[in-house]
Amino acid sequence: MTNTEHLECGGRSIAYRLRPGNVPTLVFLPGYASDMEGAKAVAIDAFAAERGLGIVRFDYSGTGSSSGRFDEGTLKLWLEETLGIIDKLTDGPLILVGSSMGGWIALHAALRRSSRIQAVIGIAAAPDFTDWRFADADSAVRQGVGRAFWESGQQMLLLRQEIALDCPVRLIHGEVDPDVPLDVAFRLMKALRSADVQLRVIKGGGHRLSEPHEIETILRSIAELTETR
Image: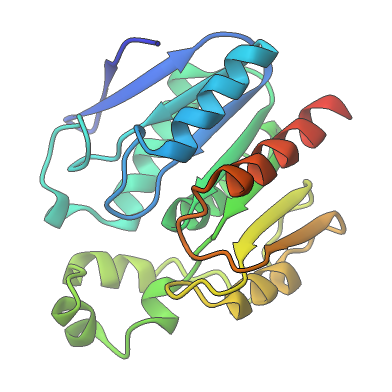
């Protein structure tokens, strides 16, 4: 088990676990209100250890072991922290693995660091969820999402235009995901400019995708991207 360390980012102390290894380095981005100790993150870390790959996983400010208040978090703030983790803790090619909201942030990070991105994996990726899930800011607040986060999300929408990424992208989605409709995955697949995009739908799968066979699908996707390049 790697130790938890902290990186200063904009006055916030961001908790992370870094396992040095070969490239491409995996970067795991948690979902909304999740952290780096979830079942998927731990399984991917173990996979990286077995394969000798580098991996970094971390907690956004206000979550897990990082400093800050969760209700002050925004998509822009958490993207800034993601880029800080990438720039200060990693070298060489990367594979970004984003879960739910983490998939949205991963796409933005990939656009901003495109020369280093070998591939992106979205696990129940939820780009633009402030747009398609809530009617307006008041609706978001009533359902527990902060107004600042909603406003930040509306400024960082991706699905209304082409997403200018050319790297391989793998999308893994549950057939009956109650939180991120499968249609969102199809919309994302069509919006991506890359010609190498695959959507893998898990029959009967929900949103968490943390069952053993679901995690195996995620690990198999990572293995394919690291072994063939």
